[in-house]
Amino acid sequence: MIGRLRLGLWAAALLLAGSAPHRAPVQQQLSPARFAEAAKELQQSVLQSGPHLKKPTPAQGKVLRGAIETTRRFLNGTHPVQKMNAARQVLCLSRAYFPEDLPGLEDALRVGGGVRAPQLIGERVQRFPPQARKVGIQGTVILEAVIDQEGCVRHPRVLKGVPSLDGAALAAVRSWTFRPATLNDKVVAVYYVLSVPFKLSDPD
Image 1: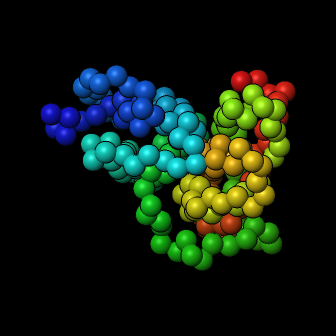
Image 2: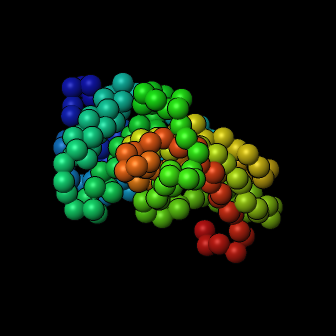
Image 3: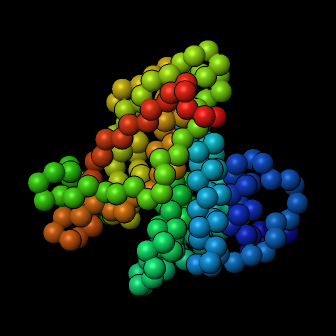
C-alpha cells in the first residue's frame, strides 16, 4: 500500500530519521508554501544521521527524487529570495541521499582569483554528540568538500579530526546548503574548506 501513496515530504523525512510511527503518512504534495518546513525537517534528518546516511527505501526514494524535480523546476524561475533559498535547501538535502553527481564535478575549482566563494544559506547547524560532551571532548573539525553547481555539499572528508567528533562534523556539513560559487557570473563547482567547532560551553 505504501508504494501507491504519494507520500508527504515531512513524513518521508521523519521515516528517514527513524522517528515516525508505523502508519501510513498523510498525503501532501510538496509546494512552494511548504519548502521551508520541508527543508527544516530534512535538515534535522541529515543532521541526526551520523557519518553515514541511511539508504532510503524505494518509497522514500521516490518522494525524495520527486522533491528534487520539483525544486529544480522552481529554481529555474524567478521567485522571492527566501523561497528560492528554501527550495535550494530541499534540493540539496534530498540529493544528499543519492550518490549521483552533476556532470563536471571532477573539474571543481579552487576559490580565489575570479572564483567567488559559495555563500551559506541559513545557519551552521550541528549536533554535539552526547557521549563526547559527557566525557569533556571538544575541538574544531576541519573538512573539505565539493560545493557543486547547485550549492550542494558533496564528498566531504575530514582534513583535521577530533576523536569522537568527526562523524558529527560530517553530518553537520551534509546538512548545510550554499548559494553556488561563481566564475564570471556562471555557477561552478568548487573545493571548499569548512570548519565545525564543538565547544562544551555551547547549549545542547
